[in-house]
Image (tube, rainbow, N blue to C red; front, side):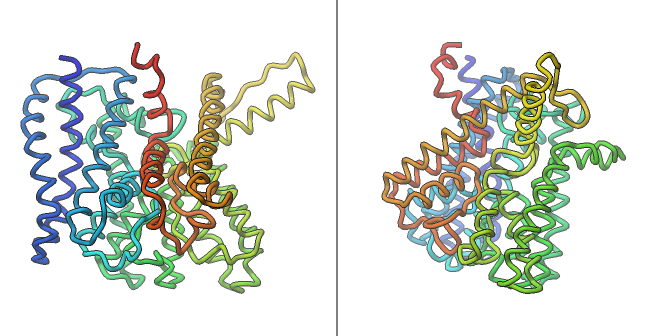
Length: 479
């Protein structure tokens, strides 16, 4: 009975994800594109055939589970959503095979800007919209949306969000988890609603403005153009994108404190200050390096590219592989940073770097004062000791995943730089790197097995690795 109820919950979560197909389906109907209508209607109807009865049954049978169950449910939900999201690509009539379709869907839900499609601009508009929507819903999290809209199910919501949300510490900004989820989604939708007309004012049509707003707010790099946002060559669009990439990768809990008037919490937030400091330092170095290339426009390209990589959006401002070596080095180092915890960004997360830096400083003090007692302080408060252990373990696992991914990439015939940057790009959900995965390149020619492997790594990276790696521990199944 326990596993039957869990299976019903997974079906329900997939059903909610499938409802997002109504948006591109409506567009296809308006455009009278029969092929596109079929591409979205068939998977939607097939899922609803099981999800609707499941919703009725599950509503009468509240499901309670612990954090360990949440990890399995979240992983299954994301994996099945990626498979479901691949169906419209296969049925689109664009010649997209199953492997490329799954990879494209995984890139969308994992908010990774990579692609295996050669000519993006040749795709039908409903498919372009679907690519951006998978980004947008994957950014804040399908599970988070479910907890916000389905509180009547009696689901232990915090276990789901704990398994899905990025960052070492999961925090409730409001007393009730459903209220927390709703606030986070309202903030997410609000920022997106502001960004769309700004893009329109910058010269985009409404369709492109919506698609790019969905992508940027999700900290993803998917675009309706082959060259991404760089194709517009607009200082206004670059500036707006820079600001909103930074906002999307900032901890959303800070927005709640801002609304509540808790301004002191914002200025004392350790991660937020470190995040902005990294951005400023990277921008200054990049600007200095790019002055010989862009002159007075150096700050524009430097700030955009720093925000893009730091937030793990991955959308290139230009072909940075032609930039000076110093600029490339800064971009490469930013790939190790990631955005803030509790944001739509991927990567290691700035808070983990802050914790390790503070712990390293304490260890140096310990050499000077052997009998001293030192603790890590976050937000001017003493942090828990287990957070330090958890951060060290996560970074160790993160590096291990990168090394394994590098080896698998090298086995496929890629050079060392391409292999390592590809590992960073997919694990941190950045999407672009150097060499074979640099700007202007796509993964269409990569071996199929490598695309499947990258898809798995992207999902694992999006779910903070532990959610997936725990499932490979025999003790998890013996609990």
